[in-house]
Image (cartoon, rainbow, N blue to C red):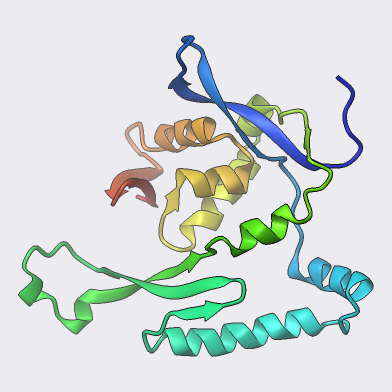
Length: 206
């Protein structure tokens, strides 16, 4: 089948789950390697949307400064591109709500909810449909120690990493990412420790 010249580039990967025919169910994801910095997006906006050069970067810096101050006061912020709110967690396991004191609480990142706004905005540009790309060679990625270490360290900067995050940073499928993370929890001197946060497996450095 000839490839379309335009369209959203995607890849198809198998999951560990079996379908009705006994074969692995597959899923689609955006093609690997398509990433832009805010500087590149700023340049694109300048060239195509008549914004001033550096304007987008400036707005992001100002929003980060302002929004972080307001979220530090406990506010959730609704914006044209979604809703941002601070997440909290306890530093230790506590079963008695009355025993929780201020020093037990810590910041656990920012929760982002895009709602349906992005779906509608992106769908308006999908007039060329979708275009399938060749899947990356997973075995080559797994053999690239430097790539895997860099992807792991990116996630661990916030204290822990999830399978989804590791897959995004490394380019691995969710199945291969989980398999690699689990492998790092094995042996006499494991690199990672696996635990549970809600419905999600998280991996922390040992």
